[in-house]
Every structure is written in C-alpha cells, then in structure tokens.
Amino acid sequence: MNTPLNTPFFGWFQIVRLGLIQACLGAVVVVTTSTLNRIMVVELALPALLPGFLVAWHYAVQMVRPRMGYGADKGQRSTPWMMGGMVVLGIGGVMAALATVWMATEPLYGALLALFSFSLIGLGVSACGTSLLALMAKRVPDERRAPAATTVWLMMIVGFAVTAGVVGKLIDPYSPQLLLQVSAGLSVLTTLITALCLWGLEKPGPVQLAPVSDTAAERLQKQNFKEAFQEVWAEPAARTFTVFVFMSMLAYSAQDLVLEPFAGAVHGFTPGQTTQLSGWHHMGVLIGMLAVAAAGSRWVAGRLGSVQAWMVGGCLFSALASLGLVHSALSSDWPLKANVIFLGVANGAFSIAAIATMMRLAGESGAGREGTRMGLWGAAQAAAFGLGGLLGTAASDLAHALLGEQSTAYAAVFGLQALMFALSAAVALRLRASSTRAAPEPAGVGAVHFKSPEWLKGGSSS
Image (cartoon, rainbow, N blue to C red):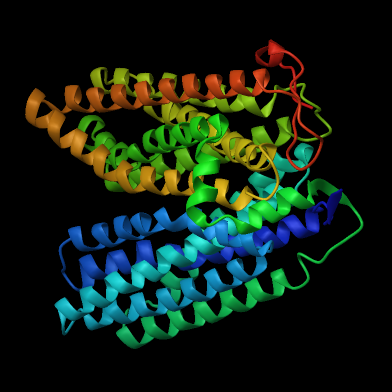
C-alpha cells in the first residue's frame, strides 16, 4: 500500500517567495561579513585576523547542516526550520552588531560575544538555507530547476547588493547607536518578510509527487540521525556529489582573495581598477547563470545542452580560464579583463548547474531524505568556502616564499586552481556515468532518466 504525499509542484509565484527568503538571508549575512568586518578593522583598529576568524567560524558551524536537514525530514515540513532559522539568524545579526560596539571598550568580552553571535549566524543560515533547498528539491519540477535555482540565487545577490548599499548610507556617518538601530531594524524586517513568504507555502494540494510505502515511511521515521546519515553516505551518487561540491567550491572560493591582489601586484591595477575587475567577474557569473537558466527552460528543451553538460563544461572552462590567468601572470600583454569575464561566465554556469543537479539528486535516491542530503552537500560547500580563502592566500604566501617572485608565485596558485577545476569536471563525469548506469527508478520528485551518452552533443535529460 502506498501513502501519497499530496503536495503540489511549485509555480513561479512560490519560487519567487523562496527567492525573497534567500534574499533576506543574504541581507543579514552581508552586514555581518562585510560591514562589521570593515568597522572592526577601520573604525576600531582591530587586527584583520579577528573578523576573518569570525567569518571562518560561521562556516565551521555550518557543519551541522546535515542534522538540520534531518530535522526537516523528520517533521516532514521545512517551514518551521526556515522560520526558526531566520529568527536565530536575525538575533545573531543584532548580537554581532552589539558585540562590535562592545569591542570599542571591552575588546575581549566583545570578541567572545561576537564568537557566540557568529555561532548563531551559522546555525540560522544552516537551518533556513538547508530547509529551503530541500523544499525546492521536493516541489520544483525537473524542467524548472535550473531557472528556479538562477532566480533564487539572483534574488540573493540582489539582497546582498541592495542591503550593502542601503545600510552603508544609513550608518554614515558611523555611530554605535546608529549601527545597532539599523541592525535591529534589518533583522525585524527580514523576519517579517520571511513569515509572509512562508504563509501557506507548504499547504497540501491535489498533485501526487512521490509514492512512499507505509513500511518505508515508518522506517524513515524510526531512524535516528546517525542511521539516516549513514544511509545517505552509503549512496554512491551522494558521496560522489559531495566530493564534487567540495572540490569545485574550494577552487571557486580560493580565487576570491587572490584575484584583486594579483591584479594590483602583477598588472599594476589601482584599488579602484581591481574593484572594477571584480565587478566584471560578477557580471560574467551573472551571464553564466542566465545561460544555464535558458538551457534548462522548457522553451529551449535541451537544444543548448543538458544541465549536466553545463556543470561539466563550466568546470572545464573554469580550468581553461585559470590557465589563462597563469599566462597573464607571466605575460603583461594578456587581456586580463576578458579572461576574468570568461572565468566568471564559466563559474556562474557550473555553480547554477550544480545547484540544479543537487536538487535532482536530493530526491532521486528516494523520498524522505532530501533534507539530509542537502545538508551533507551544504556542509561540504561551507567547508570549502571556509578553507578556500585561507588556502588561497596561504598558497600565495607559500609560493612567494619558495619562488621568491610575484609573477611566478601567482602563476603557481592559478595553476593549482586550474587543476582543482579539472578534477572537479572529472568527478562530475563520474557522477554522470554512475547515474547513467543506475537502474530505472519510479517517477517522482527528481526522478530523471538519461537517454544516452550523447549529452555532450547537446542531448537533454528527461
């Protein structure tokens, strides 16, 4: 006997609501990781290591993402975890601002409060972000996943940009009281918006997505977290994709803290020019995201290649662009701006394709563990971002010490990045091969049946 999960597919209205929640999440995070960073270093003259450690710590806390996803699976609802996560995130944001103000008079106590505050931020991001992705994996139909992922992530980027600009204007000229007022107002506003977006979002409907037997449902409910995690980790696709997420995001994040110093040290760019260079990279990322969204839309129907092809191709072209940066480190006449835009396009393409693939794989191995799988991959991404900036700058310093010359040192770092992207593409191909060899599964959320190995020629999954 099968127990139907009578939950409807999400349309664009529901997807945009999820995008607004993601934008709210990004709005709180960007203030804590950029605005407070600057205040600690500039206004309070504290070591830059302190905010760097706090940001790395909030990524480390996100190792709890699998447990958060398991909790959403256990309760069979994502809404409480998303709402609760946003509340915790908002409290953490306000406390981080308070800790920053306290550091001006009591640096030690302020730093300890900041450590606790960034722990709350990591927990809030984990609960809300993991549950949001799990809900998308369950409710967004296959043909809409790439456009949906692009929409949600673009809205998050808009949340970053708008919040940074507005908060920057509101706290200028800076005063501790003003910082606390703006931070508290932002947390209240994002919490209210999240509550409105979640209202009635998970209500049941007439569409049956995935049949789950009563025996299987009972077994899933009886499992504890350790058993659920071990079961997910035993899935070859889940393990392989975890490795892919970690390696690709490590390569992606490692370049962030290296690109601008490289442009200034080797090519003589001014601070304003290096900022513009980062802007061109972000523009390229946007183009890559939109390209994957177009390729995954129902109107194109695979004529621009499958999402899987964009994921592998994006990694390969990211490796090629990184090799271009190697050449630009050794040759001053290399078109650096065009190279950086190309790198951005490739980065945007593989990242959105990876998110769409993540949504598919979360439900492909069986309903009931989408949150745990999303948590596993979210933890891998958090670990990669936490290590990426550290390893990128450490590799640069080590290369300088060993090679004794800036151009060669940066060339070595970008060469290592190219290798990581190439290995990521190889892992993605292995994931593709294992998916192709897998036995056919019942149609349901995320069930995808590959037609043939002709996907590199532009074939699509259906």
